[in-house]
Amino acid sequence: GENVEQHPSTLSVQEGDSAVIKCTYSDSASNYFPWYKQELGKRPQLIIDIRSNVGEKKDQRIAVTLNKTAKHFSLHITETQPEDSAVYFCAASSTFGNEKLTFGTGTRLTIIP
Amino acid sequence: DVKVTQSSRYLVKRTGEKVFLECVQDMDHENMFWYRQDPGLGLRLIYFSYDVKMKEKGDIPEGYSVSREKKERFSLILESASTNQTSMYLCASDGQPRSNTEAFFGQGTRLTVV
Image 1 (tube, rainbow over the protein chains, first blue to last red):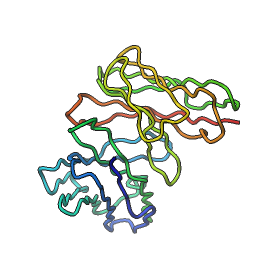
Image 2 (tube, each protein chain N blue to C red):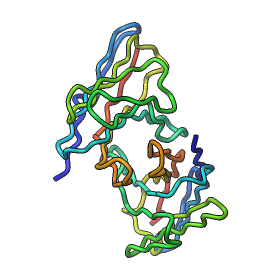
Image 3 (cartoon, rainbow over the protein chains, first blue to last red):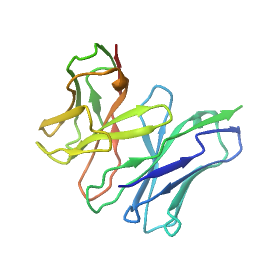
Image 4 (cartoon, helix red, strand yellow):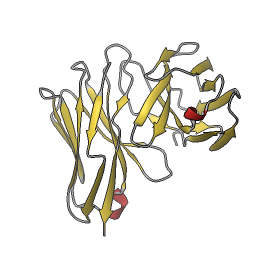
């Protein structure tokens, strides 16, 4: 089955700086890569996703890049703000077979004012 | 507003008890999932279901079972609760098979087994 590894497990950045979280996956059939943000005490919520037919996607201050050859994808947050502090999860799934989401282990991002 | 609702926010149960965790979604989603969340381990899939009365094992099904008698409701059952099942349990649903759409999560149930 799919295996998703996520790094780093914790990340602290100064407010205004950029943050990058990286994930690798093992199943070459995976073709959908969402990122979820979980604020303290709240449920995970989708913030951005990318499909395998594109290499990059942006939404305001967040962007995701995908390298299918190397089987890795990354989340980039620019101009970080205190409200970006949360746990971020990457995930991977495929539309072939049972398309279940396999999550990474999470990154706790702390923005230092 | 999208809604996935779990029946309890906090539960305390005794070892050996049979425990039911309920999840209801109002989005007419086909797929429903149960995850457990533990520090450092992320979200691990226990069971999922593509349709009423259908279920599939996830990555960690041992000690759990599920029931989906109606499309909107997906129940997780701990047949005989053990202390290593103390965890946060999250239910999720998404739209269509073979389409990879956004998964919506419930608020979570923090289960403590004593």
